[in-house]
Amino acid sequence: MNKTEYLEYCNQMYAKGTPIVPDDVYDRLVENTELENQVGYIEVGEQRFKHPFPMYSLQKVFVGEDKEPDWDINETKIMTAKLDGAAVSITYMDGELQQALTRGDGKAGLDITDKIRFIAPRYIKIKGLAQITGEVVAPKTIPNARNYASGALNLKDIEEFKSRDLTFIAYGIQPAITDSWVADMNIVSDSGIEPVTASDYSMFPQDGKVVRVDSNKYFESLGYTAHHPRGSFALKTRQAGVVTRLLDVEWNVGKSGAISPVAILEPCVIGEATVSRATLHNMAYIEALNLEIGCNVEVIRSGEIIPRIVQRV
Image (cartoon, rainbow, N blue to C red; front, side):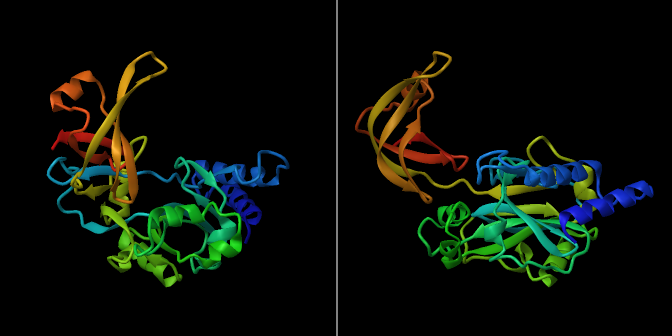
């Protein structure tokens, strides 16, 4: 059953008073189908399609710094690896692969169906609509494994994509099949897709752990913020900083007219990124750290993204 046939079936069931998908999910499926049928709508490769179910990010909880969510102590919690690759969603209808999308902004992403079909099964044993979310990862023995994996999804040459060492690991399915997330992951596994619950996946790069309540009913009852679900979070350990030398300071003028200092650093590697610049916030921050040109400084990637000087060494 393709998307058009599935939507016709949804219409029939709705007319009988027994809808099989929520209205907002139906609307997104219809919009995606209409976009596919438009000619010259937008530049090929840049057209964005909506995920049937939004892909939320996870709240970060740093060990020893942040308080964990106040969940019911009687609920079972599951901890799995937080894989560091490229998040994608794969939509199946009556077991047939229909569309795969990059995460994008969590609401819509780029179509990568032509690539994902080589690392995910085209047919699974799950009936109805199923959006399987997960991570495309590469072995951590490959330099810059995260960029290697995410960059592969942008390749134009399918043969080059096929030559890359990539694996798709699932960490979610919507709508839920049972009341247990672990049981759902076992069903995904039986369909030929590796779930994150199957291993510690130490062969792939990771950036912490994911903690989730097992009960799908309790998970949904906790609700969502605008950015993340309240029933799961990313548990992280603050990485130690890297020592390098402060070479210079640049003063940048923002759109609002505010002047912000930026540190020019002797290049250093933090995680998989080479860092040569870091924020200094303002003059008071520079004075508080007693920074001078030529001194050694400790640099971290704040939130694992933005480089920041934390102290003079």
